[in-house]
Length: 139
Image 1 (cartoon, helix red, strand yellow):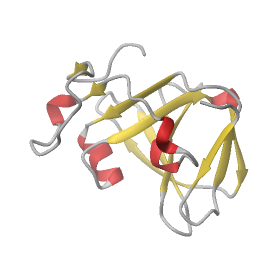
Image 2 (cartoon, rainbow, N blue to C red):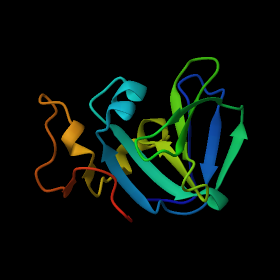
Image 3 (tube, one colour):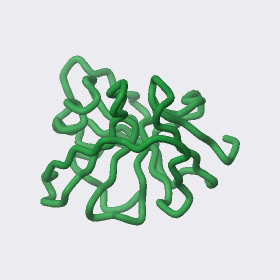
Image 4 (cartoon, helix red, strand yellow):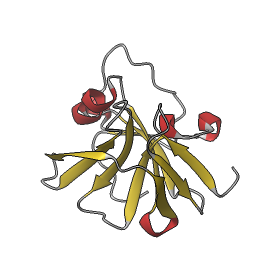
């Protein structure tokens, strides 16, 4: 993948750029992520917060306590409602991007499936990806 890379919401009101390659990419199948995406999982791209910057707009934030007890902040475009970002209160040094918000999502390469115990029975996961029932200790 080329760096820097960029992305944003569907209408272009919220835009970001990142100056380094992602630290991790993976699919989260927890119920919170299913509800937030309206899909079977959240395709997550994790970057260092210090490598990330908003270039235009400001997301609207929705906060919810995760299973771990930490606060998860989900950032949406205030105009079109597209999910763009997630911040995990336990890891303020990281920013989590929705792979769907990338200008070029074709380079998304998930490394594992997490929270597979919550996966929907109709969700067909890639058989070669490692599977974890909850949150892995590290990526």
